[in-house]
Image 1: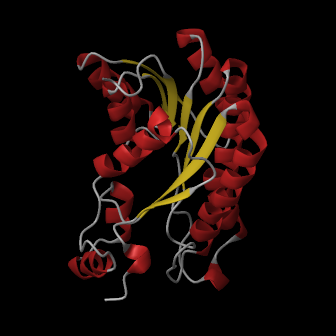
Image 2: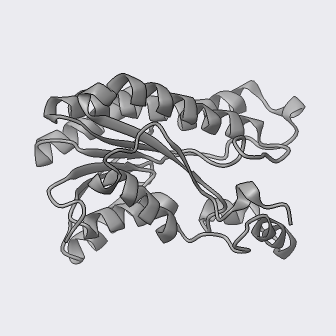
Length: 254
């Protein structure tokens, strides 16, 4: 049985990586999709793939820093499919990296705006729609970085993503009585373009791989299955969690 049959979902950051894999899995599980990202061409390709596989999806390109865009994604879901049940706020950025004493104010602000404020603005309008229909599931993409441990040179990324855990808990407590569940996934290393940009040498990739108990990094599809669990009724009594999907990175010291 399809686990998201008759559900309507928004996925941001859907043009690549975890977002793309999750959008395809949601569609395969019966959800109707509104996919968002900055790159219109990649979104159009994704929609074409979903439709070719028998799914249903529409796309809207934009910047998650814009509240107008957050509203437009919800409006598109309602206009096209009549409701909103699931939102995966996945769009994010590594932001300006390097020694924290040299990070620019703009670099800091951009990371906060995309990773934290953008997710809040999305959830603000998504939840307002979900409560009209008895609830739903909101999911954020946080990270193990700045939660179970951290690396030098990624303060803006760590702080903005850690902020999502506090946001998750606050929204879960506030809107639980209205049937809205709010959770965050905390991935370990995932084999995406962002990961390869950060780790572009065999030595770097070997170091990152060894941090994980499983001694490998994840595929985007593996993360998508964890998101599916939180989106579906399988997790009907799960809310307010920071869910580690990190291959054991948080417990490994070998």
